[in-house]
Length: 68
Image 1: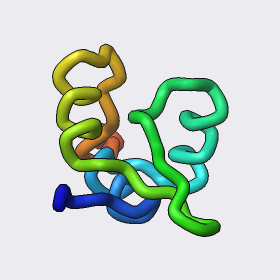
Image 2: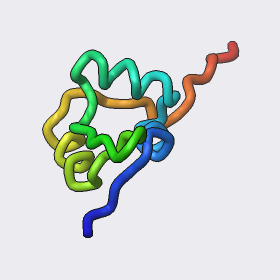
Image 3: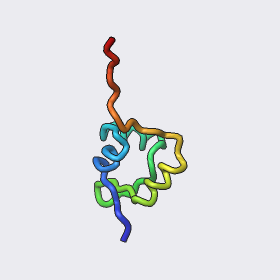
Image 4: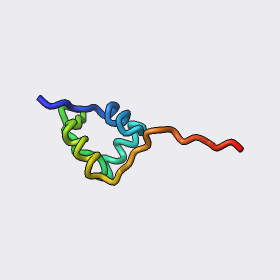
């Protein structure tokens, strides 16, 4: 059985808010999701393939302000 990620897990992995994940899904810019009941799940294999092939580069760190 393959590992499946939730919306929250995918958002954490990409370093984005969960609402942004929903926006990316609507725009067709997220990995393929599978609906299980009312919940969306993302197969880890699909997420890893998406990361390799996609130009989408999520923010992994917070932006900081330069102080002079």
